[in-house]
Length: 150
Image: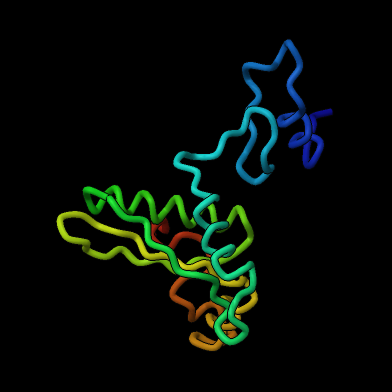
């Protein structure tokens, strides 16, 4: 009898033993288990610093914490990489993030503000309505660029 369903998933992602240690990989959704490493750069400390700048209390009206600037990016590509790393760190810490890349003299800077999740969700619903099919992006819908016309 073939292994199916959750048993197959459990067998595939079982904790490594000396026999299968080299072949076990963990998917991103399984959290921080052995064998799983977060993508560099890890900037959790910057998100936490922005939250600590206002003593961990967000604004009751907007849900925003403190605003910080990441400066010294030589190129726009580096600033985009830092912005993506900040979004990953915010997701890891359980907050939303507002971030903008701005020109700063000869280089670029990333201005970012962590936002309380409940306020961020309320903002999206107020702006786009309850119908997720009309949102410009829905995490529950597949990538529209990957669909192939038949």
